[in-house]
Length: 108
Image (spheres, rainbow, N blue to C red):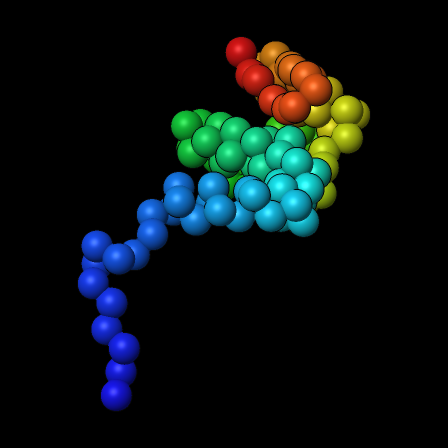
């Protein structure tokens, strides 16, 4: 016999994220990767808005395509040198706002 669940019983992504954020290990991982994830989203958005492939973007910023793929996958926290390189090559201001409870990447 299969268990059936009503659509109204399913949790939203916000409810799941809130529950996961209360887990200390998950919260620590979210904190550790927050800048990487913010940069990944920004970089993907930039590529889409400028109709660029990963390879084309890599050429613009003098990097190899696999490096762009890793940035977009948020696999590692970007170094300040990488952020500076992206800023210079794309002529965009990137700012890290660091506060006791958050680190936020902002672009202008």
